[in-house]
Amino acid sequence: MNDIIRAMEERRSIRSFKPDMPAKEAISQIMEAGLYAASGMGKQGVITVAVTNKEMRDRLSEVNRQIGGWKEGFDPFYGAPVVIIVLGRKDIPTHVYDGSLVMGNLMLAAHSLGLGSIWIHRAKEEFERLASAFL
Image (cartoon, rainbow, N blue to C red; front, side, top):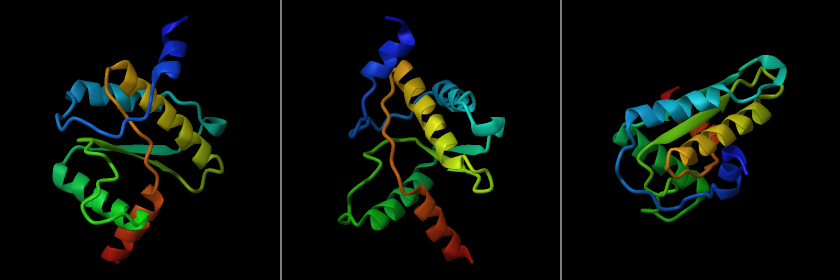
């Protein structure tokens, strides 16, 4: 079996992360893997942002917790020190599919580097809520 298929079979969602920040090189490699995801009509309409600042990461976690309706103190990012946000341009009809393919690449890349990952929803709701707080 080749390495790519093996990674697809072995990758699992992780719900408990070490607090250690991955090396910048690893984060860069993961982010770059997202750039190579297929996209509808070759539009490349997905934007990825790596949040490594703990204060910002914790703020996003709290907003995500509120939207998800969990009790205070719960971390919907399960302690992950890095959050990679995947956003799709709404003016591109395939933005949801494109973003999904990027997420798959990101998670497989993390796995290939010995890092765990999990897909967490609610980015759309988070950014709508945060944007309204600044308007």
